[in-house]
Length: 152
Figure 1 (cartoon, rainbow, N blue to C red):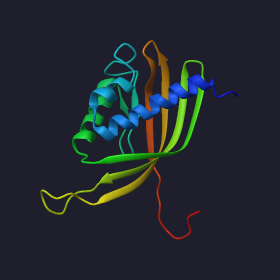
Figure 2: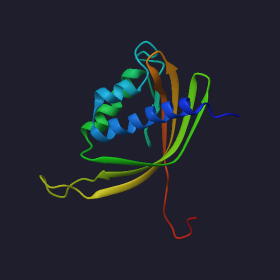
Figure 3: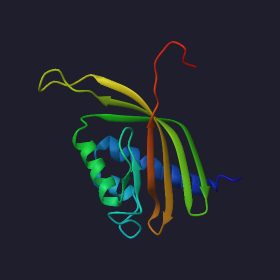
Figure 4: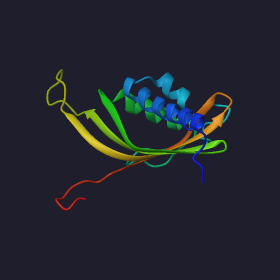
């Protein structure tokens, strides 16, 4: 099955990178532009998000509110994406990737920077082609559990 044209794959890849760039810079306006617009999603339907350990969020308002809360409580975050796969079929595109996340942990004393903490999340990002270009329709992140010496 074809993955889509080179131009389509490149456009979806760019839209996917825009999600992570907005998160890294804490730019809620840019993040809002990544998601489907109010024309495609209302406050109850049309956008779906599952952050690791969270319940399913449905509706554009709930999804954007969740990101605003995450950004407000995150001093530093950086994503290193690996295992990125992009498939385009008509007006829908699927991106799977591993988010290798580096973020600032809680400081021991007020006014100091906390330690850097690493983690991995496997993400599935579903995009729709809209009049404005490719927009995120659904994000699902699942933590990758690590531990033990018998890891492959």
